[in-house]
Image (tube, rainbow, N blue to C red; front, side):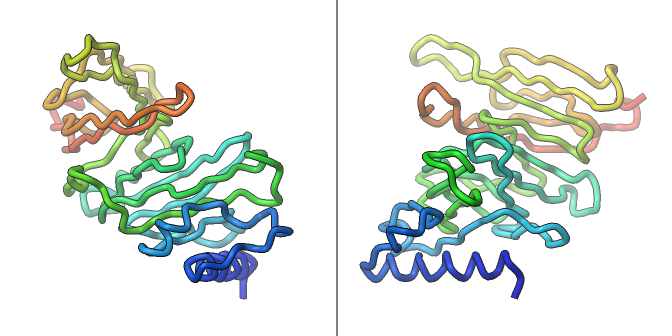
Length: 241
């Protein structure tokens, strides 16, 4: 059995034990600190670092993996759009516990997420995901929809990047966002779009992106959370010339 499967199996036993009312061993400092109530009522999965040569875990129609190079928890998610091999969508976000993560097949909830140095040093980072969380009234992503996280950025084919932030607005006013779209290969593909609202569009690499929904979640210690859902369509040949 691979090291990753050994770790996942051990964490799975911890989850099962907790749902039965048992506590994880106190001496195991790598044991997930999760909301046991959520994981006793709903299915949870544990992510650990992916060993070289192994594929990322796949949940709800997309790949999810944990990366940790700094003292926080970073998640990468990816999938292909337009029902073909390209473009490949990839989002990188600095995860907050309790945050919902939109995937092609529905939502997952970040039940727990620990980097190498949070809250205390551990031998490996890990995340606990609730696979079928209560998502209130948020509809799932539609076909050819992706998202730009407010606590990270997104890209196509590791070449065309986009980041988003919520614009300041008066209390009760409509929510708008600013989008920065940039290219690794050409400055001509860069753009800054301000005061975009639901229904507005912008150019993102090889696609036209129409904003479907802006979902700003309550921030934690000043860190933004949420996402901008966008519907994609290929740019016309005239628009690309």
